[in-house]
Image 1 (tube, rainbow, N blue to C red):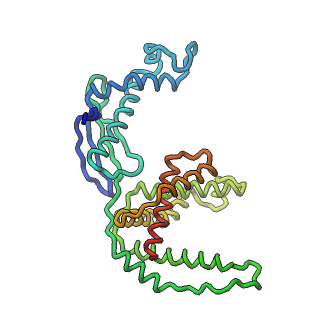
Image 2: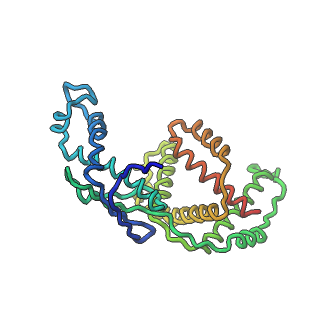
Length: 297
């Protein structure tokens, strides 16, 4: 079997705090300068110079306009992106989120040196989740009852069943989460906060209210509101890690056909959605559902 081309020369891994890892590495000049042609094309297509068609600026004029350093930085970004992917695969690093990349040496004709800090999937110390789920199921037997025709906002029997199931799942999730030990990566908490903030802004806009006006009326800054959201974000991020760990341990996976159907449903309603992100979202939602179904049985 033919060996894959090298994308980096050396790498040193160092465990850091808060479930992060530091990667220090280098890429030889021979390797990273191979990206010059593609980098020139990328830079060429990103700028406009009078007298030339977009993407058709001669190299000497392009360099005079943007500078050699801008080209080197583009080359470095491409080389490190490839090297980072290979380092993660070669060293079996469970990286999550966007890495923080820092160039430590960038000079034409010299090895490219870099430092990358990335969050990794933390170890999750699970309790006896089967026993906890059984105990919570035995505990929770809310009566379903019959819909009350006297009340104007009556709750149907189907809605009562749904509410009872949700209440039971919350109890199971809270009990397992409270008994689990996990060091939360900050990037996961920030991700949850970002999603909550995006939803919050969308809800405000649907009410035809400007965010600035809402904050002024509430006498709060967005930073203060994010601080209020943080406990919930931490709880949600921790639960997702726990559900992932249970799914891996019990080999619980959604059916590929179900994932495909869910992705198509998402793309049908959100035409601007990215298929890859939609697939990740669908796999997560369906896996979570299957984990809860498994725990309830």
